[in-house]
Length: 108
Image (cartoon, rainbow, N blue to C red; front, side):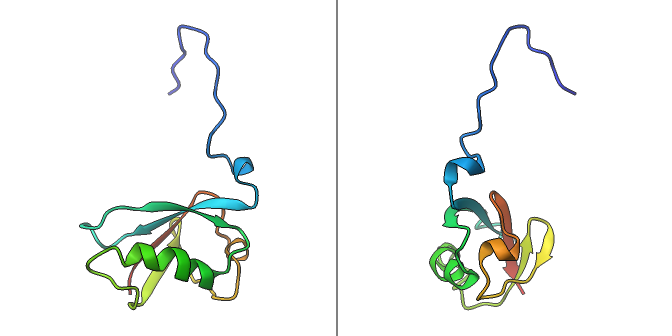
């Protein structure tokens, strides 16, 4: 339930709005099956980046920071809460990955 303020205030625009990023976007990466490595991250990537480039330049450095994964494992993916099947040659935009979406994964 909203609460009314007892004073006048202005609503500040979001500092992470899509319009501020141009052709880039923020994408969250989260390993769902490792409670000891519970540190999701946000990366700034171009919308036109292919999945293969995203996997090599963003995902592998993130996942290799965990002592329990190497990046050589097979992963099951979720885009927000829905199952997701990436395709190497498609761009993130074509795959439906948009600003502030979360790519969750776990070992398959």
